[in-house]
Length: 443
Image 1 (tube, one colour):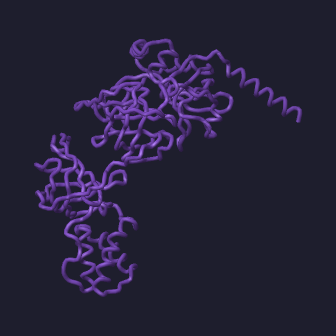
Image 2 (cartoon, helix red, strand yellow):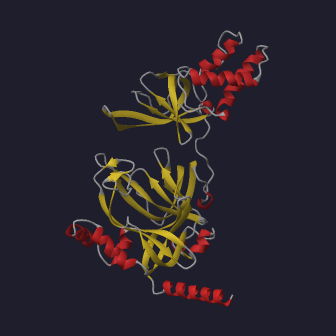
Image 3 (cartoon, helix red, strand yellow):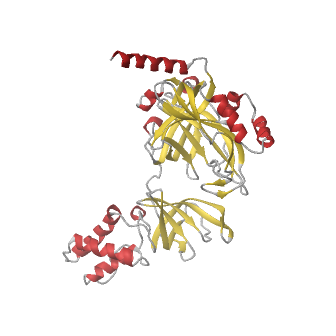
């Protein structure tokens, strides 16, 4: 159980303080906090309401002084014994794999006058959207710093006579510009043009089709994933609502789950496809100094081909590259063959890592994936193929267009385009070096 923070405790301390004052007891707040912290760390079997009741009892008060039901806005930590009166705003069911086999669970969103909360029910509950229900002895967990309600076999649920009205909207109506997206965000709303879209099948036994691509507005572009199969048209303008955003290697990634939505819309301030898909020609130094944009084009010399380049195998669940047949997340799996390049490119102003996908790797090597796979089989491994790739690319000059990012792990361009360049960057670098040596000799 995670320790409750000071902000999490404040509403409960305020409640206790209010009850004591209303009954003529002047207790120091520090003393109340000390008793509350001691109780939640030593009496984890008690609910927050029971702890509050026991503290006022310590001051000689008898009777029930706190609401029978918790308010959703106050559920912000991991707790046991939660009693709640709420309306079902959304409910769905799905099958999940457990150690005891497949199990049907239900999940959705509950609401009261103070807010909304996601829930998962591990027991059968024959209720529908719009029902007002009474929940006894639920628990809460934290996921991405947000509380979620868990309903299990020890939880009692029944229809309630108490009608829940005036529930605050879960959605934030504000449209966020892509270029202004923070490191993480929930209930995000984005309007933009779909510049690329594709379907992807994930999973092994329980296969599922998801939809992913890139969406852009006048301020930037980001990748999105809709965790279901959807008919989304490239070039059209869409509004994405109730999405959540995470960052990977410095780039925001937009996700639409069960509670999100995507629909066609219109917007006059969204540029056309040609404008959105044009690359900004720049140099690596400008990118590293922060003056680069997300969609960039550089020209540089390949200084190093990383060992993880060439013929690889990916995890069927998460697409991570396997090492000796093992995924760092899903363990030993049957890998899906792929082709890619991880190279260090230098343009004379700086250097950066570039990752190039199968299509562009085939174009640079002038070989198909089938040809590469045949060579791997003929040579009983990937070492000979890697050696050929390394000899073919090292010290050659290429143009790379793609998305640039930078974080604690370093700089990187994920390439959308890659081609051989007619410009000899190596010769320019040598000329600059000779000029520098001349200046040194003059000094």
